[in-house]
Image 1 (cartoon, rainbow over the protein chains, first blue to last red):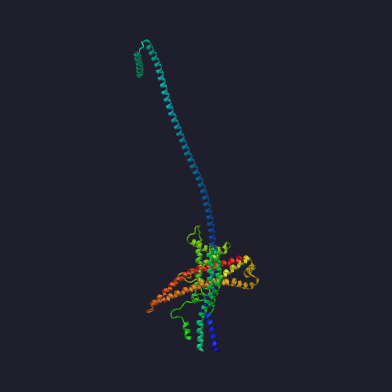
Image 2 (cartoon, rainbow over the protein chains, first blue to last red):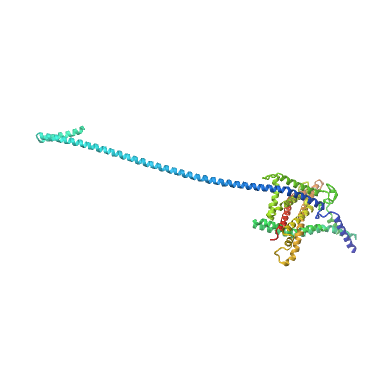
Length: 190
Length: 82
Length: 274
């Protein structure tokens, strides 16, 4: 029994020895690899810190400045565009107002003209009518005057004849007939 | 006697891999559950408050690092056992 | 009993699942490519140096003659820096953290490229799956955030803020102070390194297992009477493709998380608990 335990212990010791001498434990770092690993890391870090990052930071700063400039320029251009647009709108509104004003004025002028012409035409027509009436009245007056003068003459003549002849019925009648005929004839002759 | 020695030899040969597996396997249970909970809760928090996602993610990684340490000890131990 | 154990412990005939031995590159003089001795350049160290040269060349090319409107390489490089600037620095540290942008960007790009080496055909070995790089970087981060804390808050003030966080009832400090000490000065760098290394180890292991399995299964195509086994290789291949895509994501995510946590630690040292 003791021998068995001793042999187990011996085996265990042997196994441990074998393990130590045999394959190394992958959880333990190897010195050479650590040295070369450090070297490799330092190379990369040196290159990045010494060359890459200064260049990167420079280009980033430049890019930021460029973008800032671009944005400022864009902002300025936008402001300018806004201003021009407002101006243009204002001009447009002014022009529209002006056009409206001109149209209104034209309309008013036309209306005025129409009314003037109408008034003038009416006036002319009235004047024509008045002149015609005046002429008619004058003609009538002239005719009356002429007629009155003739009637007086005739009456005087008739009276002379009546007085100068024997008055009888038949003679009167004839006389009157003659007179009327005369009048009619003189009337008709005119 | 020789038989017993052989038996012991075989027991060591067979026991070591099993022991290694057990060491790591048992050590992985707790952290496995823990990281599962942790990430689940973190995702929940991120879904509820997406604006805090950055902070939650950082804290989550930190928590995972702490929890995972236990499993990693098991891993190291599985190599030390021999 | 013995027979059963023997069966269990013997790998199946013909197929050998890859284990941690696929990460063995150090300490074997046969693997030296340049030079000799314990510090010779083998595959992993060569890849580290090459990745450093490649990243440096990329950034030098991008910013050799920078243009106002980024194009091509410059655009990609600015995008990378922008991921760190917006996603990490401004988010976690605010504008105060911008002086740390070169450091964080270097961390992010260096880790990402070294993670991605595991997926690039013909290279297919993530150098971060060797613990050396994660350990070195975690140590560097540890140094940086402690120095920042001491510079910003003074040595004693920094220690006081870390070990005795304000707003805690006095008796609780018995509990809080040791925890804070361990978590800040020991656990932080340890987890930072192990998280990255372990993720890449696991990822590479999975890819290797499926690749080897795929090869093994397809090799049965020429075995008379067993060629039907090759049919199962399709599943292995599908998973290999899927896991490779997953590793692309993991490579980015681990680099991002490493950078993010670095930023969180530095920010914590700059601004004590509020």
